[in-house]
Length: 344
Image (cartoon, rainbow, N blue to C red; front, side):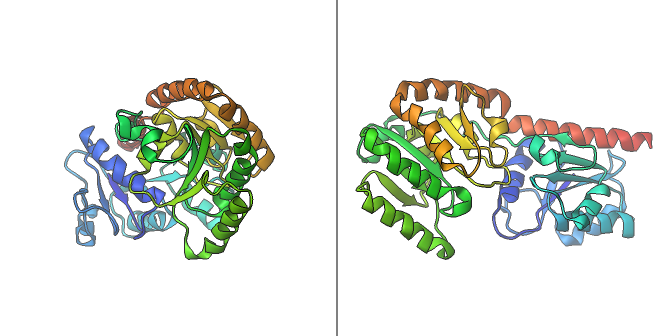
């Protein structure tokens, strides 16, 4: 199996490849990647190895080219249908929108397709398997020592509510700030934080939010932390995590927070609605600031409600969203492709 990565900058797709391949190899799969922007320790092949794809591997009738982007599908189609290399083509789709005609054409030429959520699968016009992303439940875990407690942050109050992600309208940062401005005066024991980078394009957006916070007299209780060295620590310090995005491709942060034993309020952007159960958190319509505020309010009023939801969230993620489960289900699709190839 070959999992190409044809994008130099780090992205969610790249992160998925980096996390999955070691697990897949531990499961006995002979899988490598190729392309830029990947850790040196990840098993990989270079372009000089491509002539070997004209020959079938020792133990399989062909290799599987597992694409996750359009340019990777194009490369696979060229290698299989033009160069006649011994490949079968698999595509994973995370997009939650109607695909462009050219993308639809590419997808129809795949031998198998995976959707990362039911929502993304609803836009596919071909048979597909739904395999949602998982997370490493060893990296993301509940508080273990005093550094994981809110008190270690040095911030005022007793409880922490936060959101994580780049500071920009698409992430709903303004919706979170507006909700906090309206709610925190009623709940003096709570402090709110935002972790994530602000690019130059959105500096004025951030400054407008800072001005609004200052005008509300909450500059010491609604804080921009910027990029933090380890966001996992802040998940563990939070009593409530909010994911207010207006749109997402998939969105892992609620899973990361729940794996840290933190209750969650989220919009229905990305796959959020498919990963959150009523007992583990609350989901509201994306972009609806009032609904977001109303969903957050009961948690701030009752920290014990957060604690109970956090415990159930932890169990839910460990059972349904471990990274090992994602790796195993992708492995099943590989085996189905091999079995179909033997019959054809």
